[in-house]
Image (cartoon, rainbow, N blue to C red; front, side, top):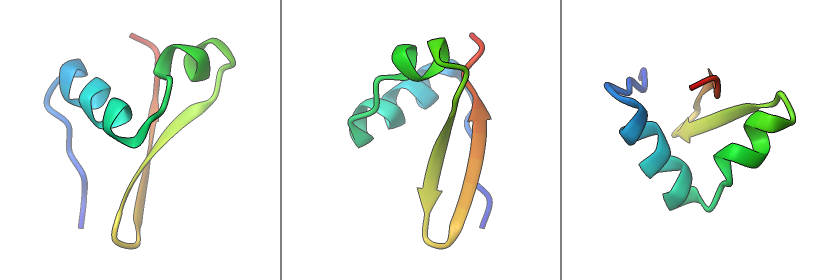
Length: 47
């Protein structure tokens, strides 16, 4: 199963739902990992 995000707002909403601070993670050069079932997709936080 693939997870697809259509916009930056969707990525931000999911990160907020998971309790992640995307700005702190992005400033450290890390990736956000969106997990659904056994699928993990890394999304670069460069927006």
